[in-house]
Image (cartoon, rainbow, N blue to C red):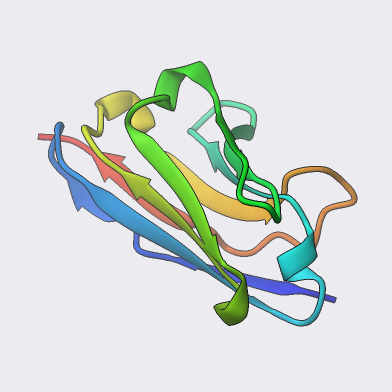
Length: 115
């Protein structure tokens, strides 16, 4: 079973940038489509970016042009570069398979965008 550990979140001002990382242990990471999800207070968890093992990417409209997902299969690591952050990006961010069945969810990493 793959275990996921997200990191890189923090408090940032509007317009700022952050780079999130997701370290995966166990086998299977490199062949699976992976995604970054976020869950804001009182809202459902949503998939905001995903990447195939061939590195084809897709994004939800609200982050297109601002977020970039990437992966390093040799290091079993997933990244999310976030730029021009907005207050509405505030959420806990998680990584997981882009399609079910999902791995056990990690604890996520908190992103707060506020002045």
